[in-house]
Length: 611
Image (cartoon, rainbow, N blue to C red):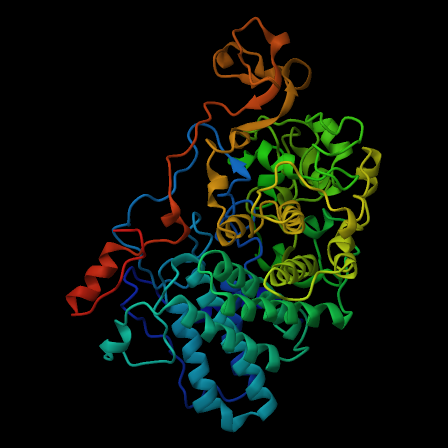
């Protein structure tokens, strides 16, 4: 049987640990007999397959939304909903503990709950490799599997730190009666991430180059290292002003990127839409790793359903995101000389913008979207054609979708790599060169176009030139033109994927979430309602349907002024979220967890700014 991530789904059932609500009630992790298990690589492989569903989630499974694009990653400045925008957490929760091994995600923080079950499971694996399996396997196998175990431990701690900052660091497995270890307070972030750095470095040096089809190997490890180390390097730079750690982590991100790039194994040769809607990504040279779905194996998802043009999308892509897309001449729209580049309706933007715009969004306004801008990125070209037929095939409906999901793409490695180089250059590192840009951003911009896109007038975006970088009038003055354009490239590339909220957090730009400061967050594209969406001109929309003219004038539909309803679509009853401050960069722990420590005579420190 060929190896793929489906194995991880099946084996997770075998190894799943019963969950409970108290993170400190450590469940028994190992019901295997150590005298008969851990005998060989097969046993180790079976156990580590159980980690896949938690870390290589893809489109999740059935109705699962944790870490799934579109359905799990929708809280950022890119997306808005009707009425009042979702508020940030404003007070510490009563409880935030868990020991569940089911993928779990705090949407507002794009990461896990206060849950150390996976840390403990990693420590168990490390312990058994060292103390049981080592005499029975080769040194090469020992190094590989220890690298796999340490990779997963590093992955989990990276996620925990991204959500909570300082967290307890559990170096090794310990007995349940070791209260000093169990109830230790939070370890400083830098110390934890230095351990993560060591774990990832070990994995990078020891995990096999090839261990089978679509399973963890050194290239996949390197891809994730580029993600984790870029995140932490920029966090250390912008939040903590720790230049030493920032350089250390960014240098590893670059080294990991170099390894993948110089391998020659990967390339950007597919059109953008096919990366997300394909029924089989095997052999695609942009995939370092993907998750395969198969209805015959009862491994399906529902992400394509919410891209089919029929199901609602709330929150939805807003004008702030749409304006960030480059014009095909390589200029932001305020600098572009293209005809109609400043006409921000859907038909003109399809023609004048980077091809990823057309590949991401439907080319007509849709009432199923809170902003009328509807994303069909995660479905093939055929899927949305059934939306008004009343007979949508299972592969495009419900939770029976079977299109494969990218887990780690080469384009992400390239963008992580070039950003790390640009950030390091601001701290004394080597300057970014045109060759660097050509090997990363320009390679991505040169993706082939689909015939459907070409028929709409879509063109490839002009290459980036370091000698003629745009100086966007909307650029933050504390961000260089090069970094601004690299950040823009990420925003275009990863719409509804994992990165946007994490990006604006690590850049210390959470203020982008404020519609008071950024009014475009509450708008959709320019629309002539009578011509493009006359179904809105009904009595039920009187006083609710509004547009904003270019001069800022707001026109409200009164039942008879349909001809005047031309302007930027105003999200229905759209209002800004409550004011927030910098404490929302990190999550608080639950009051119950603090009390549990206290009851045992220990102290668990609350996240700074929370009480």
